[in-house]
Image (tube, rainbow, N blue to C red; front, side, top):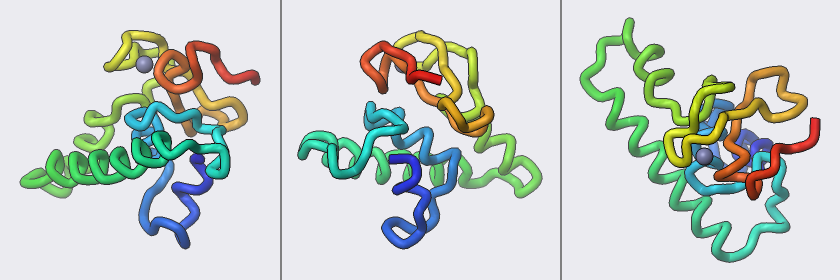
Length: 118
Ligand SMILES: [Zn+2]
């Protein structure tokens, strides 16, 4: 799913950080495949895309350019928060295997409580 969100022909403009955030809100595994999504999964994914991008725009409104990056980082739920508690369930945020620390997810919220195999 992460690759689909970042592939700019389907949905333009979603980078790595917001991909992590959207999948966390949608409670979808970062390694799930689009063809395997149920109707409910797709509804949650679409809602999460809208919610996360809207929140991101609102959170950064009125913030001076020099603070924009810090404001973006502060607002992240799981992205860049390896080892920190998930704001939804309190579980530990993990790196997506193979991402070399560039992508994060919550096993409790997104992969049925089971961390993805390394
Ligand atoms: Zn969680």
